[in-house]
Length: 473
Image (tube, rainbow, N blue to C red; front, side):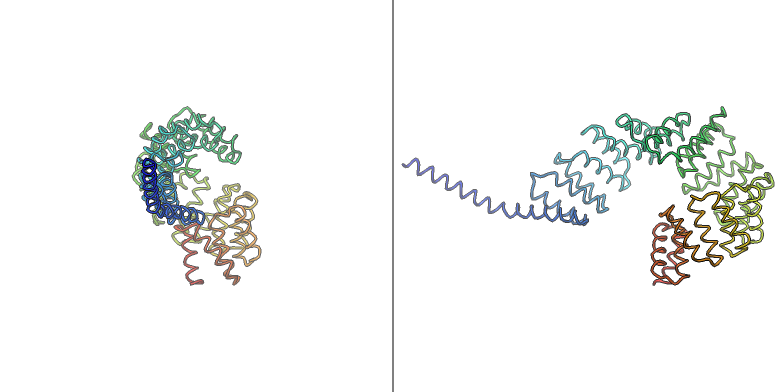
């Protein structure tokens, strides 16, 4: 009996200790579960900062759920706070609770904070931890591209395609990189991209035509120049600059390549003047060199300098409509509208199939209310006939109709432009102006706001902002 009494006493003490432990631990557990509930609710409502805080609190109170640190990190990243996310991802990794998706997002956080080298290291470590994936190699390829390490980017895209040969974007991005470094290898990648994604077909065909033409000439620097110009036409100025650099490296006296390198540098935010000066020293009587030097001075607001170079290009090659139009643009910038109109007319006379020249003429007439019905309207109609599916044709036709007083037609054309290109700021801005003229306040406001949002640092965004301040304070 004494033995059983002792056992009962021990059990009683154990139960007391367990009860005390429950009393001590239960509030923390309940608080942890409540933190988790609030975190999930905040995530569902898009309150990511609050979700990150609640997940962090839950992770501390529920230590057997270390994956909550990753949830907190993902929420912090979604909130736009990559530095906080990095710290939380580190917590998750310390607990060995980071998933493959977590490794990807950890690298994303480093990249968003501007530390691309650490992002690359994290993604490489993620491969070692969890094996390769197309998602991680796509990130590696783009990060290497941003760093200008094109060989590494090419290798990453090829590795991705070893994992998934049906990735159209990977074929396309690889093709663009090869265009800047080894254009002879480009076409298979581009053609495969177009086969997998018919939406790329028009772009690929343009590149293909340029590259095929370049290959007809057995001259490596020329091939690099033409490949670079094809990339520039797509707005891929970094890759274009790489192609131009390779062209001048292969032939130091290649004036045209130096000129295009200067053009690329301007598009990339640096001064291309030294490259242009080199080109002028090499070929002072090249029409193309003089024209691009003129364009440089026009961008600097020096219409007088621009006119001198454009006119020289025109004298050297009087039958080129592009130089006539360029002189017209510089004359317009200098305030000589009579001369500008004459040059724009001469450009369309020299190249009646050139939609760009008809667009410049029609826009000029609408902008300055000059010969709107006798010149501007026929020019806009010709433009529509040449390029009916180009949103700019519809937009210019709208401007001419508005200048001519046909406001209903102007609205129709602006809406047509937006149907073709809803994310372009220009037709939104012009439509906003039209609705102001029609005293339709709400649609005017909506379109001006849209123009400002789509072009925050450009001319349409700036003008839209001023009109909003004036009419909708």
